[in-house]
Image (tube, rainbow, N blue to C red; front, side):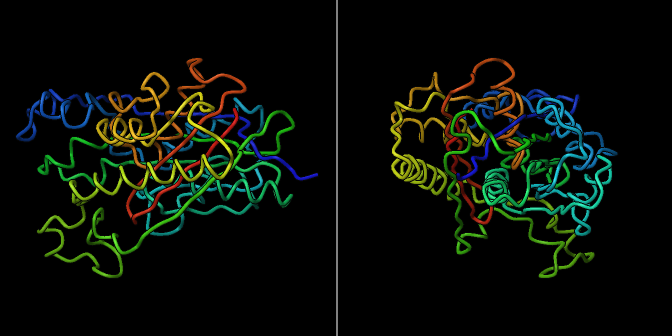
Length: 327
């Protein structure tokens, strides 16, 4: 019989420091009203300067392992989704592996930006279904504050730090991960990027002076493509697996902008009382957004055993992905 992969446990962590819209009013030319109206965000979490993405991830991973009832040594593969890794290399996944005390398993990073966690779920599902691995730890972790230009009001108001994790393994009950679809379009890679610091434009005095090591975004174009692609991808995956929106108990979208979420939900004809959001408290945590929201929705009782959940993400690359789960 074909194995069924499902989520055995989730966990999340956000740093203690809260940066509110009122705080940002003192740092850049903006206002609480301007930010709230355009994004829906009221506050975000900021990690201590001595806390890298791997430390944030370890906190979430330990909670996911505890929920799953597993020890770190029972993990066969560790996949980390991040765009703000500790170093260019080694991978942040290897650093997390060391901090969790797991030896002699494969560990790797995925750079798919905000879609990274769904990419990780897809990878985990394939390994579980094939029988190669029994338990896969998928983590989305970001320290977005490390790539924020605090003088750019169009970007700095959007981002926050955090991590979410899920243990994926064979499940005997329900349908688990019913299906996942991922894709990308490199023609639009310039819409969201950190221009310098890689091999295309290594760090120089000029790149630092011109603030090219911070995230840049073409907001209007991103909004247009995000709504279109998220709606289309949700429609396609629902059709492929014989679901309608009536079959979906909860819609958990990437937490980037409330206007994007509302536009996609409206096109799908999904009422907002079935859309889980927490971006008002955390902002956009890139690859961490969906796993943090999923963990919170499960832990606060919103998502219950047997619920069908639709995940959708869109991010730099441009990348996107959707997944239907039965929890």
